[in-house]
Length: 192
Image (cartoon, rainbow, N blue to C red; front, side, top):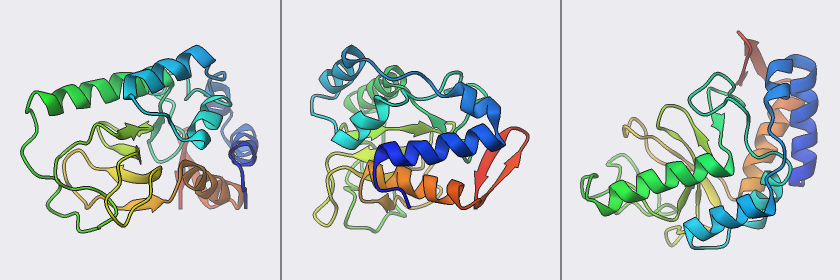
């Protein structure tokens, strides 16, 4: 199994190159220092080093957000620019009182704060029509900063931590791809 962000990306790239060349070709160029600095300034808190390392390898995917190219399971891998845009929209809606008080009624974990619908220190890293994986920079008492959880925009399922860090989340994807635990359907990767 991959142990570093670079190793995970190596496995993911090899899998995409062999099995889904359209997605391999859609991997974006590395983020610049300026793009990463803008993201950190917007969030107002330093980003975990493993996320920064990943962005320096691939700044999301081209034609991914609101388009056809999805890294896996219909998840658009967001660029620094799209993370900023998504984060600003959700945080503005939070400030303006758009969301009802309280979090997701199905969420019971003590790892994720569930006192409001959105937290300004949740960083979207993928998008699937409003839902997606988020990096949590403000965990609850039993969580860890930098953990990854899935945000269901319609509260269809409870919010649960899926990895303790971005690098672990990416390694889990690489592990499934590297072991062939996926299907390719109509130019898309679906993990098992």
